[in-house]
Image (cartoon, rainbow, N blue to C red; front, side, top):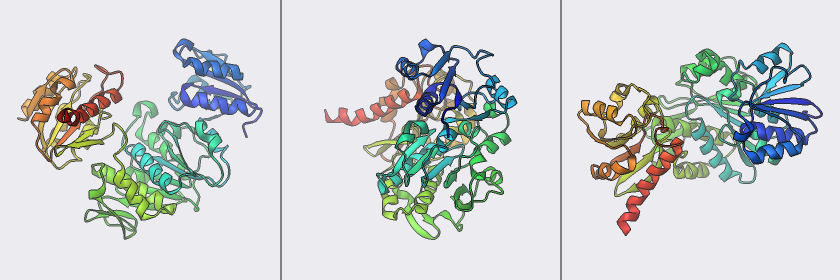
Length: 453
């Protein structure tokens, strides 16, 4: 498989770079094309690929570069599905796949493949599942996929008997063909990436593709309460095991403040640091996978109780003088901030604002019932203040978070939550939202440091 072929890779990024190295090592002739100019690429990676013999073409997509002489087109997930090379490949009956599908075909036998998809919760579920399995099987568990580790970057390490835990995005699902997980998890479906897939129906079809490759030897773990998720997998052959945060079912469920796996109590939710019903559901998914793979309840509980969440996504930061701090800088839209606010029952002080995108702030109103104060920051801070003032909630207004942080803290009491969940992008002040999150965490940690001086 993939030996002595002529392969065209469309899109560099990390997955294209890693895929090119794998293919060239197997004696293939490899062409790699990316729209970004060479001077904007990673210089070391470009030099490495060129020295390996990869044919590199940067800065444009020439009409005559891709033709019938190629055996495969490997498309980066971010490339539009109607790209001219993709359309041409289909006309020429050249198979279009991605590096996940390519590496799946190269996996050794007897690898247990766990694949996690859905609209929300993928990264948290994947990370927590990996943590549990890594604790149980430290020499056999490998993490890959949309979570930041292309499968092609770890494929050489995978051996028979290993457990491979992968996050699969919708864009990756587009060009999966034979990819078949032994255990597939579907967290939920909500309208997303419509600009890429054009319709919600096609988005669901693409994300559900891997479930239809499963056989009756495989397991699918699915959210019973999500109608779109259930409708999208009708007719799959795998054994479906449901989870529900709303009803006591024959599966994984929430009852009296505890998560049960087929009537076996696993963990009290008070032991779970990550907040919100959506995170309870993410824990259910991880429990389902772990039980399928024979992990003990002791290890499951240990890993869940220690898990602080994925960095920057409703991440528990610290507790200082009775106040809990949560970093949700990845909440760059109203919906994400709604979810964050809905995750807490106690009084909350929230930092809102950033890049002006004409967000409809009024959509937050039903979720502001526990908010006692707001720090409005960034480009849209004045509009945030006007909105918060209209609710009769105390609002501080500063251009920069660091300038108003201490004053916001002074308005809090023991038992309160101090939350960064801005509901907008960070590009007015920060190169990326992770920098905003890191600043919030430092401000929280510095409260304790300054107190000890």
